[in-house]
Length: 552
Image 1 (cartoon, one colour):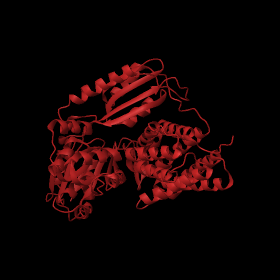
Image 2 (tube, rainbow, N blue to C red):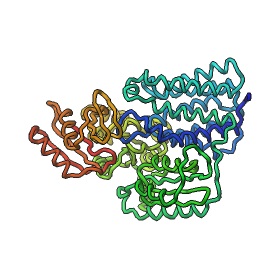
Image 3 (tube, rainbow, N blue to C red):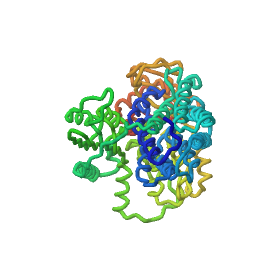
Image 4 (tube, rainbow, N blue to C red):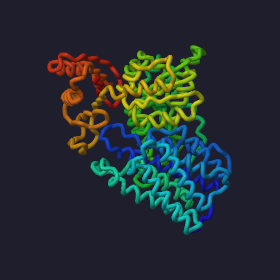
C-alpha cells in the first residue's frame, strides 16, 4: 500500500492511536526510571502531555492538517509536565511550525516537520544530553529525511522514522553510562517510540483506537456529584489529602492481549486503597471511574488492564479549591510581586507561606504540575510580575515554558529541591526587579546541601552503592549515597555525610510516612557527636520521602 499524503482524517487517526499507545504503556515507561525511588513519572508525564494535545485536536473541526497540528502543539504545550513532557511538546511545536498553511502533508513535508521538531527541541534545552529522548528524535528524523529523498510514500517515511527511533533507543545505554549501569533504555526515548509507533499504525489504517463512546449522562452526573460533595466538604486547601480528581472511561469490549477479566467489586476495592471519594460504575460494555488520589498514573495503569482507556481527565483540586476561596472572599486587590512555589505536604506549604510565598502549586515528585497549572497559578496571583520556585529539577522546563507565554513578566529561580527553595526565599526582595531577585536568590542555591530519605522500589546498583528493594536510600543533592535497611541509621549516616566544618544549621522535615518521635531519635543521635550544631524539626507532611534534610 502506497500513501502519498496525510489528510485531516489520517492525521486525527495518527494522534488518537499515538495517545492510546502512550496511555497503554505509561506504567512501563515509568518503570524505566533509573533511580530506584518511587517517583518515576516519565510515562505519566508524557501520557498526560499527549492526551492534552489529542483533546485539543478532537475539539478542532478543521480539515486542514496545519491547523490540527497547531492545536496539537498548543494542547501539548499547556499540558506538558516534567522534562520529558516539555521536550515532547517542543518536538511538536517545531512540527507545527513546519506545517503552517498546509491542508495535507506529503512525504517530504512530513519528514521536514519531524526534522524541524528536533531543531526546536534542541534549542529549548540549555544543555542537550545525548542518550535521551533528544537522540531518539534526532536519529528518527534523519531516517525520515533520507527516506523522503527516495520515496513519495508517507507510509514508507513514517516506517523509517519508527525504525530510526528503535535503533536510537537501543544505543541510549551506550551514550548514558547511568542507563547501562541500571540496565534500561532511556524512558523518554521509549515513550517517544510508542508515540511514533502509534502514528505509523494510524497512518496505515489501524483501528486500535476505535473508541466506544456511549451516552453516559447519568454516569457523568453521578461522578460530578461525588466530586463536588467531596471538594466542598474540605475545610481548607491544605486539608485535601488526595489532590487530583481523576476520571477515566474503560471500554470493556476491546479484545486485547493479556486483558484481565473485569469484576466491579474487586476493581473498587483496589482503587479504594490508592484514593478516596471513589465512584466506579459499569455496564457490560463500559466502566466509568471517579477517584481522588495522589497517584493518577496508578489509576490509569490499573484501569488499562481491563480494556481501552478513553475520556481520561485529571484536575488539581487544590488549585480548584483555592479558586473557590478566592471567589468567596472577593479579593480584587492587585498584588505587585508574587512568588509562586511548587510543593507537596501541608507543613512544607506553611513553611513557604511563612517566608513570603504568595501561592503554592501542589505537586513535586509524584505529580509534576503542567505548564497550564503554572500559568493558572500566575494568573490567580493577581500580580503584575512573578517569580516561580519549581523546587524540582523535573519542573524547571515547564516553569520556563509557562514564563514564555505568561501575560505578565515571570522569572524562574531554578531550585531543584524544597531545601533550596526555602533558602532562596531568604534573599527575596519585593522592592527589587525580577532580574535582581533571580540573580540574588539563585546565588543562594549552592549554599545549602539537600538530603532525601526514601525506600528503594527495586534491587540495583548505582554510584557503587548496592541497593536492595525495601531498604532506605540516602540521596544527597540528587545522588544516591547510601543504602541501609534501618531508617534511622540511613538518615543519620546521610546527614553525617552532608556535614562539614562550615555547617551550622540542620533542618529536618519529616514526611507523612514518618513521625516526630523517629525524628527526635535521629536528632538525639547526631547531637552526641555534633553538639555545636543547631537543629530544627518540622512536620512537612510530604509524600514519598520520609525525610527532607537541609544543611547550611
